[in-house]
Figure 1 (cartoon, rainbow, N blue to C red):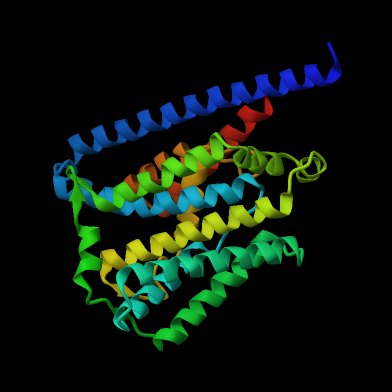
Figure 2 (cartoon, rainbow, N blue to C red; figure 1 turned 60 degrees about the vertical axis):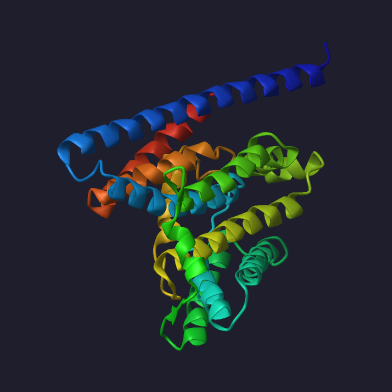
Length: 319
């Protein structure tokens, strides 16, 4: 048996083992979320009501979409600190477009195009200019907040299109429309990350960028894709947020980048790269949202995320 065959078999075995551990982690998170909901149902009479659960699903949905987009970037060993600012900025863009008579479909396409451009800008700065992801996306965070405030002159833009705002308050089969948007993002995201070669390329880059490049992976293109997906998810959340609250405001979603990162880490994503999933951050976002509804001090949320990150990283180092 050749050395190449042995190495391939070892890599396949390691991949399968990581998949089993990831599935076990997801089941653990699901059990934790169920237990948390059961405890709150008994301790807080108003928790297990239709209005409260639907509100939780609506808020958690936006965090979940942000966390899924953030996960693509973190798996490559990068970070995107701009997603909260992108949410606020794109809420301003779509509100401005709707108030100036653009049809809903046109406003949606243009707003998502802004997200695409932001992702390309991040990829360019990181791959061509050699800027660290932290610095690149932090600069974008500050710039987008300022540009959004310039567009609105520091005010908010009210959205009077009831067809647009009514979507966020609607439901399908008793489940809020905003939660169905998580499904729309999560299913393609899961297929992309776990059942396509491009997902494997992201993991390879996070594990060893140079080795991935030498093995034939177009690392520059994949980093572009990761940041484009993150920015598109953030732009999509900006659209949903504008529909939910009926205004465009550049200062909205402050701190949401930290919630997205925390949700991803709680879901098992390693900040060192090469470890992550789609279902983990999704569950982590609803755990975090539920915890916020309990009005816990914010430091507990990050303690939870830090503890989970240490356990996850140690577990995978043993493989």
